[in-house]
Image (cartoon, rainbow, N blue to C red):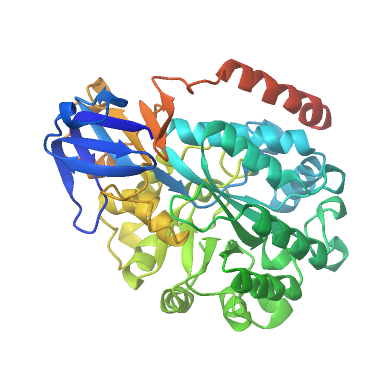
Length: 461
């Protein structure tokens, strides 16, 4: 069993119920979990195979939990002719979806390494990916390859098996090459759950049933997803409230949240991405049904008609986490940056609403314990004895943080952290330290992934 002692931490931010911050304390990790946090832990009393890390001047935080992403979109970042500001939504979809449909299994694997590597560098220890793109030529092993990528990097991975079933001829935006039947989708969900899903404490692998969105799937795709998820005791996820509600109303007579409630796609085992267009009644529905929301702040800059009403959701008691979203609407995979963006966006619109902006430390909580709550992972999201040893460490003895170290809980939201963290630990294993992935060659990772971008993406732009 591995043991690691973080000695003389400047601050340990627990994100627990009491907002405890330990100053000048030690943290001991044994195996996959935290054993102790104390003012002083005598090194001479510990096992001989204990690694001691001098954490002087460092803040230690719970690992961040990313609750919405599309890893495969990393392969289409930073292209001016795909810029939302220069294209209408329909023009953009006509350009981007045919490109997505050309990706193959190797692209999905290397894009997953790309996204997870960037997440880890910035303190993320658990990642949920909404993988809804299954081009026919790419086969059905895409999520299997994502689990391989997670194993390589040491990422705690929740795989969202997404899918789209409605043909374009019936109003979908999805090319036929990316479309599946409901039976195909449900059968592969069941296979993945039986093969990979591990509900035990400290689990590194879980599966979520995640039909992409109501506008691109048949109703039966959602109802069968609900039936399978509740039979297998796994979670449900989808996109809701990102501009489609009037389309759903025209089709069904109900806006999207009401439609979800009508079919049973709500509850403590469900969380929804985006939700920026919800009204007060819909927010109350989510709160009363205990349905969660993954707030993805950075896409609001590009594709949101308005700022997501997080202050209102928080006041209503909606369960909230944070997500990066994919490169179609956010060209980075940096959840740390999203903490700052989420806070600043709410401050931007504060004068327009009657709901107070949540205090800055709340946004750190959304990214940690909030995400753990959405994923139903009581073993994650806070630092304390018995919790998973998922954490990151930040050396604050830099000009970036002069004058800002008095309030470690609010640092991410108010000041923002742009550089990679100094250390990331997942499940008791150090996966990022001093600018390196231990045991891995980042230059090689770059070269291999970029070669597939150049092979598949560039020729088709």
